[in-house]
Image (cartoon, rainbow, N blue to C red; front, side, top):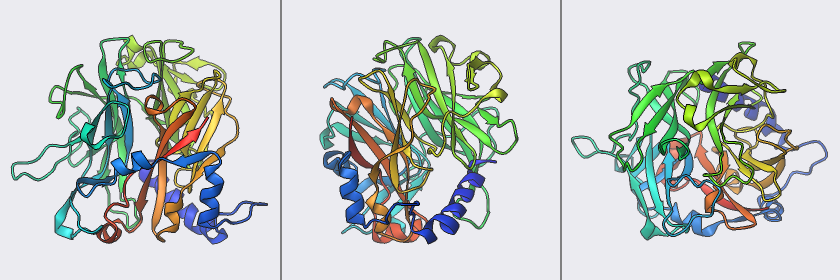
Length: 405
């Protein structure tokens, strides 16, 4: 099962089962939007400064898929004035808006781009987007598939990334090869593989010196029910990254199946491109055979994060069951669990603004978080995107909250 089939299954589940029940659970009263927000605020608060940074009238004014990578590799050390954070986006809209609206001919969607932020604070003067243009000056995607297995017409959806400071400081970004397929449903695409983009240290956009490689990290589950995609989140458990209890490994998290189960692989920094050396968690230990991989939890999202906590535990941030209206967290005793039950950290009010709006892909940014809290984002989109974007041009953008630890 590819990502298209999986999303179609999730969408069917949402509309045929959850929505008629008002998204209620046994013993839980249905809440108003105001109730949802006040309930969530006991654990989280709206990050107005970060949300203002991404509310933009021209240039990039919307998109999904956002990860924040500290280019000094210090994933779990508070950012300082010299810290540069690379934000990577997937499908994005570029153009100009007026009074919150946009005309059909005044924007273009591209498949991916990046932005750079200097320093620890969301300041407009320290923030800049980058995308290439074609011969006519129109925006184009920054990363285009060029691997041996690439097929005509494929494009990249970007996963997580990190700077491998324990090797040669190469910036690695997971990139999913995707192609459009006519299905008649909302999600008219399918994934065909998992690539990795390698960018030399010191490179700047448009990253012309990049290398791209096919990987075996697009794995069929043992029962053949789904394809497992690694790169949904990266945990760099090294001293150089600032991990509090480092074991020296790079952990890559993957998601698969209608239950949106979470799987874990790992490798040493020096062996990151040697895929035969990767290990997979089978529920009891690490094995070389990816077909023995076992899930560590479920009901997560295709983009997520694992971050260390001050007390020695770890916190997994994700969107509950992929597209449900709650940002969820789970505490774990180790990078492979056991994971405590899901706690709802935020009820996303955007789903109450429009019948077609949905939310997805929550994740955290430890190096941009203040002590005692965790900065978390989630995405907003619409099942009727090309209609809603005209009247609410800035709806499709990440939203940020601060989670109390």
